[in-house]
Amino acid sequence: GDDILPPKILPKLLNLLVEKKCDGVVFEESRFFYGNGSNKKQKSKKNIGDLNQPITITDLFCPEKGFFTLVNFLFTKNSYLKTDGYPEHHGFDTQGYGIEYISRGNQVYICPDSFYLHRQANKKSYFERVYENGEFSKNYFLIMEKILHLFSTEIIEEILKKYKNEN
Image (tube, rainbow, N blue to C red; front, side, top):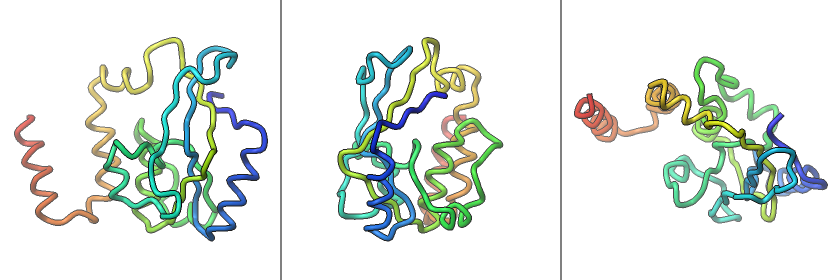
């Protein structure tokens, strides 16, 4: 209900998926709009990465590069089966899936000159509501616990130290 694919975009994504022999393809840009879509480019968010290299788990922690798999993207059935499926036990389902997807070794490329349209509600965003309900940290933890095994002991200790200092 809140995402629209522009004409001719799906073949473009599929062609890149086949050409790169990769597991997934993410849009280069998300364009946000309100209402019925008459103003489809009200604001946008772009992925800034090397179009010739797959996205890495490290890229997901570099906000200056973009949003990568934290939003909708196209992926193969086999790569989907490598994950634990789409998370339904917390509110950051799309973001959680994207992070876990990359952590499982799936190769994802940015599709050049591609975008999708995402409708924004005329009310507080989902993230604002989650934050106000005090669930932001819990949801983010539920994402991170799935990939904690990828971090060194030193990084895990730093995360825990920061958590203890905040509480």
